[in-house]
Amino acid sequence: MAAVPADLKSVVSSLTSKRKHVPHWYLYDTRGSEIFEEIVRASSTYKHWNHEHTLIQEHMKDIVGNMPSSTMPVELGSGASSKTRPVIEALLERQGELTYVPVDIATDYIQEISRELEREYNALTVEPFGGLFMDGLRHVASRSEPKLLLFLGNSFANVPIDEQLPMMKEIRARLKVQDRFLLGLDMNTDREAVIRAYRTGFTRCPWLDNFIDRLNKDFEADMNKMAFENTVNFVENPADGDTPSYVQQYLRSSTNQRVHLRKLDVTIDFLAGERLYLAEGQNYSCKYSEHQVRRLAELSNFAVEGFWVNEEAKYCVVCLVPNGK
Ligand SMILES: C[S@@+](CC[C@H](N)C(=O)[O-])C[C@H]1O[C@@H](n2cnc3c(N)ncnc32)[C@H](O)[C@@H]1O
Image (cartoon, rainbow, N blue to C red; front, side):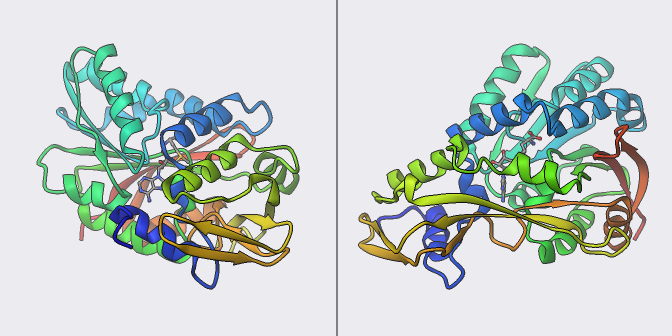
């Protein structure tokens, strides 16, 4: 695999593994990130962008009010940073100047967003980190500034379910008691609404088309968009149990077909009906009950300082404080 950059090697291993899949982060190159932002902001039925944005604005005083001065916001999976802007503004107003560290796998995209933010806010310094979530957190962990760690847009829910608690525990271990962790999670378990939001049926989904374009470009491949169908399941789990409900999303091969990755001289055979999952784990995205969020916090040694839900209890923003060891 010499011709493939190191970060793409895991994509090939995933595609050729027994359970064919791509790492979820591979859906977010610059174009994928732009399309994602357009889709979530435009949705008039599944409004989780609006819910989260409103909750952050409504509870801004509670979020930043208890933070020490010289707080440094660090954001995992920052994307367009569109819901972080009100936080940046509130901290700037209070502190006068601010350093913000967005962490995201879509390196080129967040560099562009960082330049935009710096142009917009004179007293803001942005230090983007292009890479995986936890590498970004490790990168800033030793910094002395009090941190407001943000993990918004239900991005945490794309982490494989069995890796979520270990990830929370590592986050806790890397924060100090003065820090805060703001987590935005989707609570919408209305089956029809969820499936409608994630499925575009036979009409083309520009975001998934972009993923296939990326794959064809990165690996000089010949994957045919029209020969795969976007398919969505919703797996419901009891709200009082510890396992969240989740969306499972995959492309289903409509025929027996062979995809060539010419750059590597690798072929991948798909049987009619075979699935190509769009995430490492079973869950493409999770939907949580309040019990499940509180349980995750408790098991990873965080106290819940704020738990804010929108009117219809479809989305929550949670402010967590590290418990003393
Ligand atoms: C669901 S989007 C959320 C974007 C933004 N925070 C929001 O709320 O609209 C997830 C973001 O996480 C990034 N991402 C996905 N997996 C990642 C990973 N393992 N490490 C770092 N970034 C990742 C994507 O590039 C994308 O920008």
